[in-house]
Image (cartoon, rainbow, N blue to C red; front, side, top):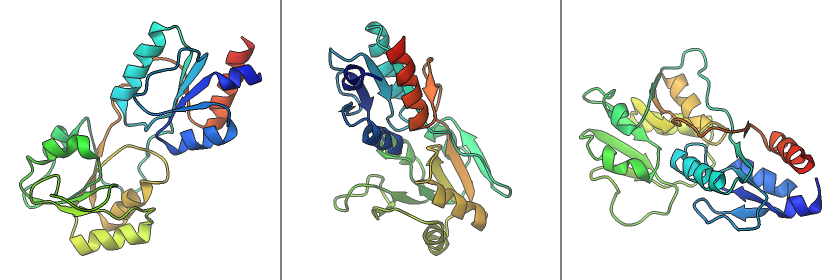
Length: 221
């Protein structure tokens, strides 16, 4: 890959894969999710969080309007292990329909779901990545703000202490969110897994190495 090609590559950040790819392409431009694409880009890699489908589609439309080569760098989703109790759903509204009366819910899906979660009138624990302070984002919820990283033993102890019966989380893939899902399996906790939703068409890489191969092909074409 030429230096010129490398300098003209934009990488939309928001995932561990984006950080790894930027470390291998230090001359590439890191682009915040939602940022406007620079005019002189010759290729862009969408490595934002895999569950940000609205952002994926918005970037796809922007790249298509400029005939700009676009690759989606997206790690695979989770695969259940023996004994796992999973319910796959489209969104939070569908997730709530699977909660029985008396469920004790641990939700780790993010702020965009809080308005829907507010419909749940039972026991609710939220995990937020931000700092503590202010009102709980959902009335009556308990809010946990530990920054992580988390491990299986710690997540298991937490769920036991809270008496969790249902975990609601997103199919983010990767190792960062896996400990709570594995802890739930070991405890027999039901996992309600929110899908990523339909993705835009076009090439996809699962690893930074595959993304580099795509860039080399784009540079030589």
